[in-house]
Length: 289
Image 1 (cartoon, rainbow, N blue to C red):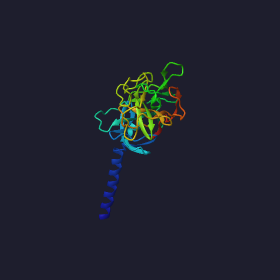
Image 2: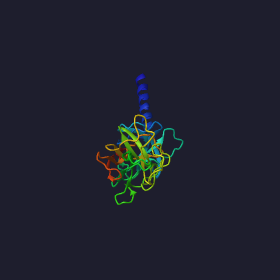
Image 3: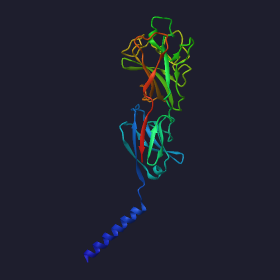
């Protein structure tokens, strides 16, 4: 009798589990990111992934680590229906549930994977080029001309923009840098190459006579950061153009650096110098579902 009761209970338990599985199918799935070239953000910002489902963004979660691959648990139906993956940079404490303007990677799903890159969502820097001169036009001293860099081309006898850069999407700005003894010092942020940069009138480094040419650039003449001395000599120093999140997440250069150049030791002041490709012109990765 006991045996019959046990078998009946066992059969009922199997039936109950079976019905439970049928009534509650798996509702989540795993999304895996394998991304190249991302750098850690400042402490107040995080990366956030987004699925585009029926034209609407659905968050896949935030992360700070830039070690990959990383996996996230997401709604299975939404993941199956997603057409595109987007990665943005968001405030760590974010009152806005929508994606920020600063989007860094995107790509469409083809089957169960999406090849993502920065070219379309930030800009395509394949054809970016740059020129600059050494000069210090913000003072009247002509003995320190190698202590300033200006992104202009005066090879024709008249100054024109020295940078040929694509228009950035919303949420990004360009920034110039010189690296002096391992320390990157900004020349200022800008959106277009044919106007002065954002700190033209407020730079602590320029001389006191004027703001300089109407192009991005900087004179390093006073108020040197700790450990450095201004005026300086920019020969054999590295000049860089980076692409920065706006608002910026760090005082250091961001990972996207489409143009760079080491100033030749024999560089002549007031003479146009061509830049070369920077170390990172695009970011890529794979997203799998």
